[in-house]
Image (cartoon, rainbow, N blue to C red; front, side, top):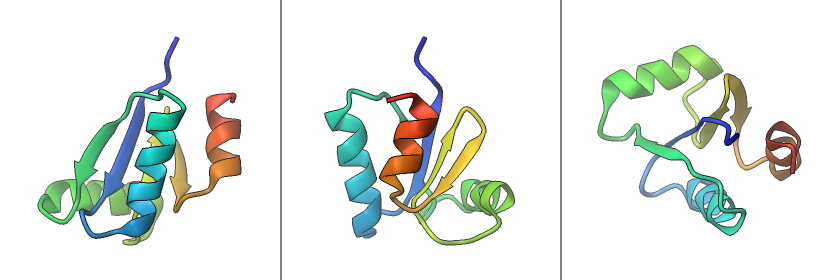
Length: 78
């Protein structure tokens, strides 16, 4: 069963683009939340991760800050 994946990102963030490209490469479905235009979701991201930097990936409640390929693979079981 596919894991629920959410990415908190901004349109101008290069690491956000990298993590989304990586998920596309691996055929991982994800929900992309633009925190630049949604202050409620930005606060949700800060509450989950403890910081304001993007990208933040939420994979079944496991929070991954930045584009940490090894941690993403481990969390997704790749």
